[in-house]
Length: 226
Image (tube, rainbow, N blue to C red; front, side):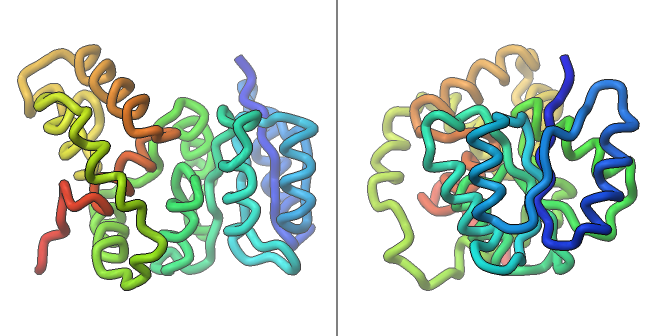
């Protein structure tokens, strides 16, 4: 299956470089380019890409707002957004995850990292590794004073999870893969995948990235203090 990719960046030269890279892969194709967030939302509705590579800082409607619009549209539930940022340590990154992004990647990443990120997002996984990145996100989520942005019902929604689903959610929030979780809990990777899918369905999460957000915002998992 060919992964359909939409590029959203206000720098034409950078978009051209991304297009050449993506189109050079036999399992990927660029289906559109946007120079701002509003255009990205419009093209996403028209083209229905599998993955949107979204620059977080663009004139007019920025990447954060555009990500929120895409994630809020039920018709675009299968679209995954990967935020591209010059500053990987950035509070906007956390806001983008809350808005529905599947992860983020620094613009200085190697070509193979970018291609791998597209494949990971298209496969429904969260682009939240290495573990240090997950820890950074955790600290932002835990210390953000904007309580009005939090969903008070999320803690109650955790009551719908089984004990095993809670255990798996804790592991997901730690940035562990299905194989790693399976080894830690002494179950099969398929069993882990089943628990993850059930947790996403019960909590209304689009993907693993959203599970991480819910785990920390609900208080199920708290960041370690180094």
